[in-house]
Length: 252
Image (cartoon, rainbow, N blue to C red):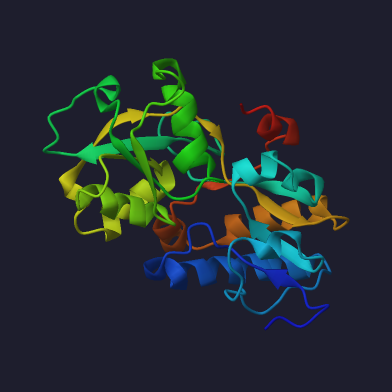
């Protein structure tokens, strides 16, 4: 349990079990850079929170959120620090997209052919797993409905497995998670990409309202730059950018 008044740091969005040692090394680099700015930073990441409850905690020093909750109201309750750049193909620095995946043995070869299919998604508040693919499919809507049914899986890995196992026909996976899945999900070879969403600003780093986001941004940039090459490669982390708040709010 986190004590009241203790600085909180979490990096939950790509904290896969296989990557936790690398994520902890990233935090060590960020922590040291933050401390050089005279700011109090916790020794370790806090992994006791769930469902983003730490995002509105008054003691939040640093966390990573999703663009959709940020756009829909969180932006009024936090300070925007900046955005990690994962150097994704066909995306500007700091941006990302989703890949739409189906089984390799599926006979359907176009998105239109998946009208009436079952769609797996991680959560309703997800930009990459829910909002972005529905925007992409909006021109194909028939009486306001494209899919016959939806399956909420709780995470991108769950969506991948749901399609592999035949529980769903199609899923949208954020491109960073897909890159990780190609390394760590044994059955990802049973899936193929049939489409990509338009790039949108990536998952932003935030701090509690009233904290010095500018100083934190400087520290994060310095910490990522100081990170060893093997850890950067493991995380797919290329750098850090400052995407304006209005660019997040403009996504629709």
